[in-house]
Structure formats: structure tokens, C-alpha cells
Length: 285
Length: 134
Image (cartoon, rainbow over all chains, first blue to last red; front, side):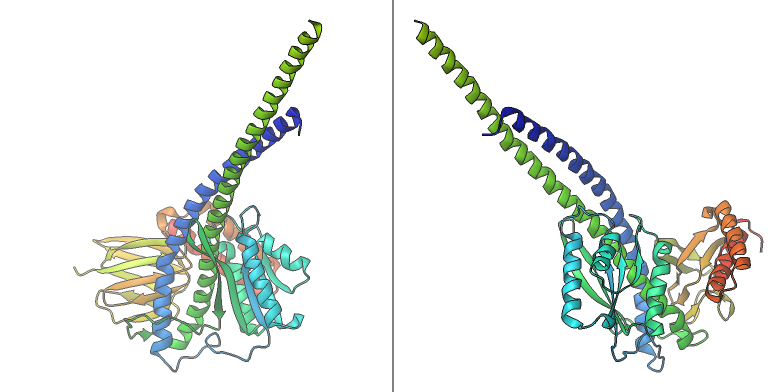
């Protein structure tokens, strides 16, 4: 049996750990509520732009744009959104496992894919496996603004237009609720599945539908990336909050059971001492 | 007077939402004025000012690119960023202007030069709107 002092020190260290996890849980909870409201603020923009894109793309059949056309696929791009820091439960590992297995399944050689990594954990994962990381961005703030990632989004869309890759998939954790985040794969480019809403307006185009698509489609693709990032951030904070809550709960359980062991051991020591004294007295008589 | 609803939406959330009598802005094909009852239209915008007239007063917004969508009942401006005149940080815009000018002088590389030029345009636009001189 462990000595009293050993048990005591384990209880103390567990207590200290649980203080940290509790603090992290509270920090994540406040970041999570802000990230969630950011993601909500973005919704009207996304809905509007989707509406306009779909009514232009479906309304005028003669308007064509390279970003709408499907090309033979020689190389595939994967945009992976992870966090910069760990301790967020399965948040990063589930996305990375999913991407890694997909790449291994779909591609035989290095030249058939390129990775765009958002977040330090994802970047390190792909770099350490010597996979082809085309673009990377780390240190995205917890409340990212559009300008923070517009550069990366522009380059990601640009690489598609230049023909570096012929399709682009996006992998991120879709935020469902505080306790559920689903790994989502979304085909970003070419823009083939633009949802058409019921009410379509026929527009005049100034100067022409083609010129408008030139402005509109890159903006649309960039906002999809930004939307995924906001979604991912909300998931990250929710995942970290849940993970830290679990850790605090586990610590409390551990402290309880350790205290029980400690008290038993102390009682056993006292009982032994009494027995020894009584034994000693009996021997003197 | 008849009015039309205007909403200005950016990725960081809605910026403006109200009824106005007239909107005038700079589209890529030129200056554009919109009154209530305009034909449905879509037009890309330049970096510039959006002027919203209502009850004899004019409000100014600094808009960075994006496009304008006109429907019978509502006019929507979708921009990557948009600011009301009173919420523009003039000092920051001036810093950005100086930075962009310097970069424009240093850079002969076409991509960076273009980027600096755009940054300069944005900064000048914001400063002129904040100080209300056109």
C-alpha cells in the first residue's frame, strides 16, 4: 500500500490540475459564446450571397466561368481547418484522421494532392508526415475577422484558377451543439452544387452577367472558407469546453477515491498503533 | 416621399439596415443612383462611398468592393467590409495610407504593387468619407 505521504501528494497534484482545467473550461465557455455569435452574424451575408449566386448561375445559362466548370482531375486540394492549440478533446484528431485516411485511399503518389492547412496542429501533422503542404496559416485569432484570412482564401481560390489543383475539398468540424461537432467534408471548387432557392428574380446585369460572375464567384468561394472557419472556431471552443469539463469531473472523482484510500490508510495506521500500545501494556503486566 | 429598404451586409455582420429615399454609389461601370421602384439589377461596386439620402440628410458609408443587388422591395449591398462614417478610425486609415504609399514606392513587383494600390485606395476612401470631403 502506498504511504500516507504519497497519497497526500497525489491528491494535491490532482487538485492543482483540476484548478487549471476548471479555469480553461471557463475561458473556453466565454470564447465559445462569442464564437457562436460570430458564426450567427455571418449567416445573413452567406444567405444573401448564396441567393444572388444561385439566381445568376441558374438564370443565365450562357454565363460561364472557370470556377463553375468541372475539369479532369489531376490534382486535388484539401483545405483542413484545425486549431492552434491542443487540449480540445477529439477536435483535431478526428478531422486529421479523416483527411489522412481519405488522402491515403484516393491518392497513390505525392503529386496528386496538395494540402492547405489552417491551424498549427494540422500544419505540424502534415509537415511531420512529409505531405505536400501548399499553403498554411497559423495563429488565427479566436475571433477571426474576414481580413485575417482573406489573403489565404484568395490564394486558395487563385491556386484553383491557375490550375495548381483541379478540385478543392474543405474539411472542418461542423458545429451542431455544445456537445456535438461533426467532421464535415465539403466540395468547395468547382462550384457545382449551388443550391437554388424557390424564389428567383430575373436581374438586369450591369455591365454583364459574365463580369459579375468574375467578381461574385471568388467572393462567394472566399466567404465559404470564412464561414467554415467560423464554424470550426465555434466547434473548437465547444470541444475544448467539453473536454475540460470532463477533465474536471474526472479529477473530482479521482480526488474522492484517493481521499477514501487516504482515510483508510490513516485509520489503519491509528488502529495499528493502538494495537501495539495495548500489546505493549499487556506484555508489561 | 417613397422609400426603399437598404441593407448593407458584410461577413462580420450587418452594418446598415433602414429605409431611405435615394442611394447613390459607384459601380464598376460608373456612378449609379437608385430611387425606389428601380428595375431588379446586380452590379459590382468599386471601392468608394455609398450615400444614403433620407429626410434631407445624407449618411455616408465606406464600402470596400463587393456588389449591389436591387430587388423591388429591398436593395442589398454585399461587401467584404463596410463602415459608417462615424465609426471610421481616421488615425488608422492614415497609417494605412502612409504604409501603402511607401510600399508602392518600394515595390516594382506587379502583384505586390497592385495590392498596395488597392490598400491605398481603401485608405484614401475611408479618410475622405470620415472627413466628409469629396
